[in-house]
Length: 353
Image 1 (cartoon, rainbow, N blue to C red):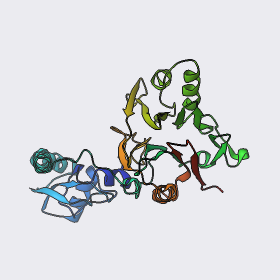
Image 2 (cartoon, one colour):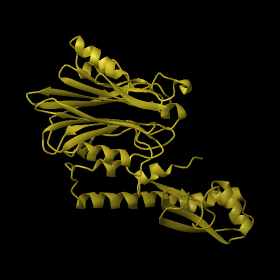
Image 3 (spheres, helix red, strand yellow):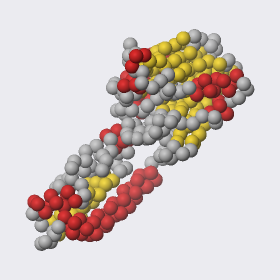
Image 4 (tube, one colour):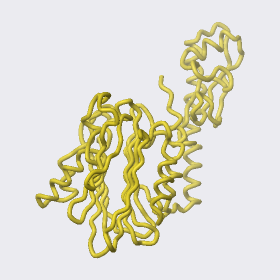
């Protein structure tokens, strides 16, 4: 038996339900599952037991109760006979009934509420309280329409991942070891993350930065370059490769973003998604490798998220850095490019300073 992480349950609040073989709050919580519940009920000598369907939260069997059904305990019951009777008379009846009830409530709420698909989110509010969104890319245009924003951050859980810093040399942003003597595996943590090529800025979470750069030099494109790559081979997580590219022309720009993800839990195939955008003032798009922490870690879902891009680079940098989990954040890089002059202004923060 496994217990869902607090990050995961918060992400899907009131969307996950569980059936427990007792009348909560009796015989529930950590350690009470399967026959153990019925053994405890018989040992206590209760005359009535039953089952409970409840919402799942970070506390084992601690979520809001949705439905319960009582079942009598008979003389001579064993844990096995009681378990079968509770399943037949309670669990198998209230679980589908509760699922139907909750589904109907969700449908009714959606019918009453028109979804604002054009909402522009505060990126800090999207990630604060989420301990692990992995690596992230933000691309967009400042609110006054004068600058292009490019941002990239990394997080890490292992000692190897956390042993990194950002360095910038010759306009190229690199991830490098903070302490070279402690590097365990350099293959997925040391790479050029941001490069300029002619009128383009390339930003990625891996060595596909160079794949894209090399393809452009030989007449290829962002999309064609990434057709040659796939997700990272770090089973069971199969970390997605995320990438972005800005193309500047006529004192404006367009941008593309991509994610390469495993098609299944076995890593047997790669799904490739590419998004192309015309910039709007004050709007950016945010893509990150993971939904939240977990084991394995759930990968990013859907389209890049719409986020606000302020005029002030320091405001954006500090807001994003402060929202990232204090234990797992490693480095952040933000660059604003003036659309008229091409002048670049950047900020770099390393936790390992």
